[in-house]
Image (cartoon, rainbow, N blue to C red; front, side, top):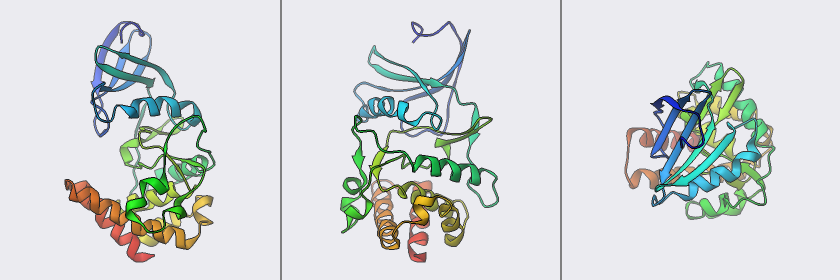
Length: 245
């Protein structure tokens, strides 16, 4: 890494991430970087290449990728350091409008033809009898964990695109709605916030209903494979949102 930077003065490990073995703010003589990485033998090593390929297509929404380095058994990605705090999804938070605006911008992006990502019908096929309802050409983030949404002086920056997918443009807003319920919103409040995203407001209700059902099934599968307090919270939120549909 030092071959690509000026001398390193210090580093600070970044907390909250789930998809990297290394995640740190690197302070050098000339700049500050955010570096994340995996060992080359890691089962999710493919996510490094995906993030690198997606990054140019989400300029202004995600921090810019500065370089990628592979060697000595590691695959590292260095991004501009988005100096911000994690988004607050609780009722009354001023962050909600900012995140809704970002979701609206993102919902207008088309999944790039030259980047291989999974489709939402494929990802949700085992959780629904109608996966084609989730089909579309939009580029989706799909992981709205609050630590992936940074509130900075320059606006919202969305990080960790490992699970980027292609599908219906309303899906990210629907996924965000479940996080809002988990954060203390009623299902009605969560729907009202999600409906600020035009793609969600105009989505077919039957498609959103089917996605709500599939989301419950997904979180049931996740908790069956290793329940943690936050995944159990997400399952409860998904069930609450689905029951309100």
